[in-house]
Image (cartoon, rainbow, N blue to C red; front, top):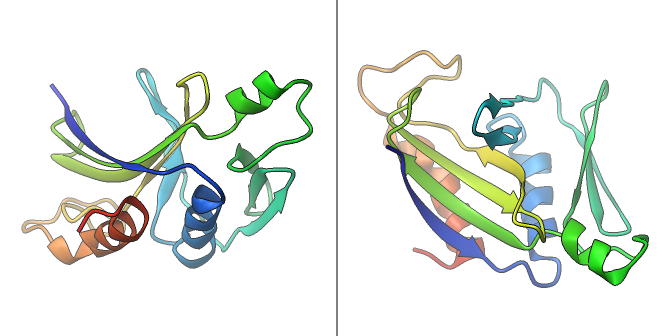
Length: 158
């Protein structure tokens, strides 16, 4: 059974926009992204730096051949205030999970919309694996530095 600990991040103002912009512009080569839900795991890694833009509350991440949008700020183009509320990030949390079928522990960031549906999971470098996802004999704990630094700045956890 998985044991997940969450460290919530305030979703007020432009905090999530700033966090994701930093991740996708400065740390794109280190992260793996996609929805991770029961029965489906999209583990996407970028080969080149994606273009990151904002329009009407939506952050667009575009590596070239495809792209995705995340509603991370106020959205005025929705047909109603309720739809705008549902679309926007309602919860964001850094997390660590112990156990699971593939890895002994995972470090990440997860976003949920106003319905509580997962929008995206961002996985950070894992000390148990090298850059090609080959298992290491001894963990390299320094690989958790980015997760710890961003969790400290955005979730206020030392």
